[in-house]
Image 1 (cartoon, protein in one colour):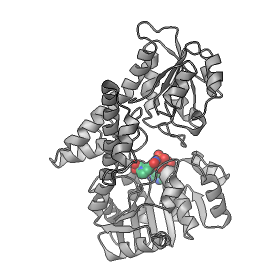
Image 2 (cartoon, helix red, strand yellow):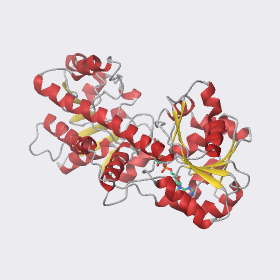
Image 3 (cartoon, helix red, strand yellow):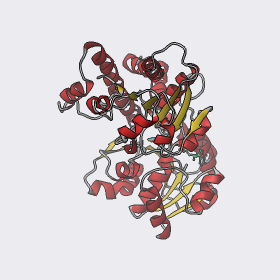
Image 4 (cartoon, rainbow, N blue to C red):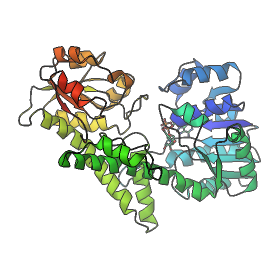
Length: 434
Ligand SMILES: NC(=O)c1ccc[n+]([C@@H]2O[C@H](COP(=O)([O-])OP(=O)(O)OC[C@H]3O[C@@H](n4cnc5c(N)ncnc54)[C@H](O)[C@@H]3O)[C@@H](O)[C@H]2O)c1
């Protein structure tokens, strides 16, 4: 199959490279000249484990290429995937669909007959109808289908998720689109990954329902963690005790500083907006969003309280981890942003280190001293706070940490450490829900 991928970000580049690895011929298109230049030079513009090898292998095999030029990419293509951003629209939280609609309008006059336009971006119910209307308006004679194929990959494990998904959801309103998508995903269904076929609107809503449900699980365990702190229980016991119940499942039951990233915050807001538009309130999701917003900032207060509160001007905190989770360089809506800003608002100096996220962090967090490694960040600081669960922070040399910190305050927002180990070295240990 010949496939064109519009947008070579986290989703487009991974999906394009994986489709090429299945044996399809893939052209990735982006508007961002610097991204395409980097890719043409063999550089990967984002950090995603394994992606550099996968891209290099498929470029070398002649199955994967990159261009800025839609007119060069589109002739003869069987399917065009739209994988552009759908950020929150300023003001009302609705998904900003301007990139999706612009892509549809730009491609329409260049599309070959019989093409299937597949929306892979996360888009509200009814977006496929509008994409279809736009293409028909721009190319009235064209025969084409519009399908939905929401993406469920996670940054940091994106290639594995794409190649071994729990399921592939396709939303199709005609048999031609269904057969083209079945053919594209055939290599996966051979691995027994189920292909779940439904209406286009059903697929669009499935993506939001999945993200809202996962966000709810995180929000739920975070509130249970708060209760554990009050009643003297350990949330890790509770997580295990409920997670072993197969009706509940043990994933997404780790408490922490609140969810962030490029998906959950914007997708929960967009789902709420859809609920309002259709007069179908989503009270549970509303509570999850409010709870998470409070939590992110609240984690800054947790560090401030650990420092004893009061006037904290002149104090310094070492922040380990800035990205919204480990194994990505993505800073979008990272809880670290709220934590750092809360500390700075209290007059505290912040020294920070992240293995991959510092370039992105510099664009959103100012007045931070960015360090070369975790120990440099701790040197002379009054407290240490682990915000992101990078593997490299899991086995810090506690004796060395002790020699570097002025006050022995260890705040572990990811519960990476055992209290007895840390307290045994002489620190005051503050975890989450313990
Ligand atoms: N990042 C994730 O983990 C993830 C997971 C599942 C779904 N999604 C969804 O996938 C979509 C893409 O997310 P992302 O994180 O890959 O975004 P991204 O911002 O990393 O990449 C989007 C890319 O699209 C390009 N672009 C925008 N308009 C274009 C146009 N008209 N023509 C060509 N290129 C264009 C941009 O330059 C950018 O490179 C979003 O809807 C997101 O919600 C993301």
